[in-house]
Length: 255
Image 1 (cartoon, rainbow, N blue to C red):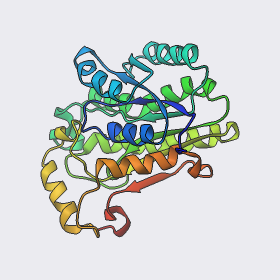
Image 2 (cartoon, helix red, strand yellow):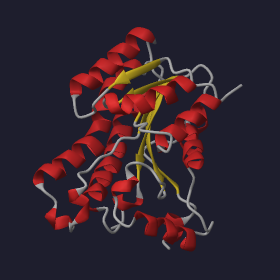
Image 3 (tube, helix red, strand yellow):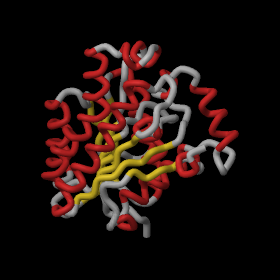
Image 4 (cartoon, rainbow, N blue to C red):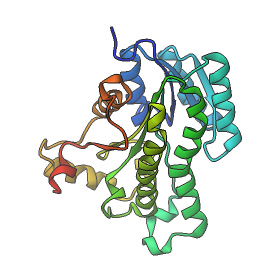
């Protein structure tokens, strides 16, 4: 018996096989979950579809999370095909590369709005559409980072967006608790992903983690997947509104 036998859910945010969301998907499938995936555009569909099909995904759907109509269409399809949803993985974030290059005070108004919309508000929009399908309770997990609570060089507006995301987790958890719907976040340490490539000096951050974390290494994609699996499963039935750190001990020690 797998932890996720009989459970169905959707994953937003797989870009390629290096994505944190892909590591999560693999762990969920290994424990018996039935999965659906979304992709942003045709270019990303070419990467996402083969991965999703390798896990026997029921549904592979287009979705731009900055477009409410796209999100609504995804959950309308899930409702027709499945009737209900047990879990949602929100692993979506974006900021203009230019807004990460310079000091935070140089963030453009348009860039600020874009980062907050895609990285934080999209969780609210996705949750709003998911709730009607979580008829027997459910679990929603999003991905955050240390930059939400500490200043990280070159993280800039993404740190502010992640702080908004973590606050959204707490407000959603309180609102939805009486419905049996849990909302949590996983704060992963630095991992080589497509999104991370936009952060200046990212290799230096990886080296810093290797040198200073108690485990003397960076956390792996698989380890983040396992922690997310826990939060999505019934093992975490009493956990909501939390930020779960998976980072080889870096955040805990304050190193």
